[in-house]
Image 1 (cartoon, rainbow, N blue to C red):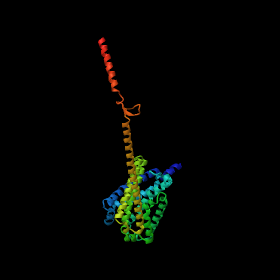
Image 2: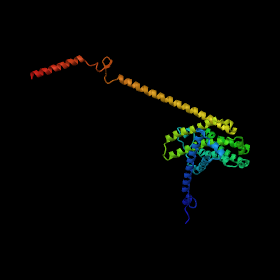
Image 3: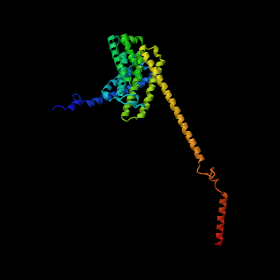
Length: 359
C-alpha cells in the first residue's frame, strides 16, 4: 500500500518525522541562545565592568574556551533560527504602535530576522576566522575577498531591511562589519589588516558581546511572554533598561580606549556614528526623565492644593454652621436664645412642683 500524501509531508527522511526534527532543532536553538546569553554577559562584565579583558588575554595564552563557546553558540543560534523563519515574531510590544511607525507586520518580521539571524552570524565570522585559521589561510587574498564580498552583500541586504525601522539599527548591527569588509576587498587579505591594526580582533569580539547579548535577551523575553511566563509590562521595562545600559557601557569603554587611534578608518566612522546616536538617545532619555519628574511634582502639588482647599471649605461649612435671616453665617450655638430656654425650663419646673403639692 502506497503511503499517503499527508504522511509523506510529515516525514523529512525515512523514519524521521518533521515534527520531532523541529522539536529537536528548537531545543538545540534554545540551548545555544541561553548559553550565548549567559556566557556573553559573564564576559561582558569581566571585560567592561571589572577590567579583566579575558578576550585579549586569551589571544596571548591560547585559553580561548569561553570566547569560543560564546562565538560558536552565537553563530549556531543565528543559523538555527532559519528553521523557524516564518514563526519569527511580526509584532513589537513598544509604546509606539507599528501603524504609528508606518510599518507593516511583515516589515517588522523582516527586521527581527535581520537582527536575530544575520546580525548574530556576522558577529561570529571575523572573530572565529582570526582565532582558528592559520596565518597562511589568512594571507590568501582569494579567500579573504570572497568572505568580505559575502559580508558586504549580507550587510547591504540588512540595510534594505532595517532602514524601514531606523538606519541607526544598521549602524549598530552591521556598520563596522560593512566598512571593514570593504577595506578587506581593497587591502586583499585579513592577515595584513590584523598586522596593521592588532586591536581589530579584540574590538570585533567586544562588539559581538554587546550585540549578541542585546539580541538574545530580547528574543528570550519575547519567547517567555508568548508562553505567559512574563508579562508585557515586565518585558517592556526590562528591555528599556537592559539594552541602553549595554550600549552605554560599550561606548564609554570604546571612548576610554580611544578607538579612533587603534582602529582603521573603515571601522572608526561607524563607531563614531554609534557614539553620536548614543548621546542623542541619552539626551532624549534625560529630557524625558526630567519631563516626567516635573509632571509628577506638578500633579502632586495640584492634588495637595485641591485637598487643602477642600479641607478649608469643609472647615467653613461645618454642620454646626447656620445662616441667619440677615444672611450672616454663624454658629448654631449662637442662634440659641438661652434666656427663653431658661424661662421655659423654670416654668416647666414650677408646673411640676404644683402638681406634686396637689397630690
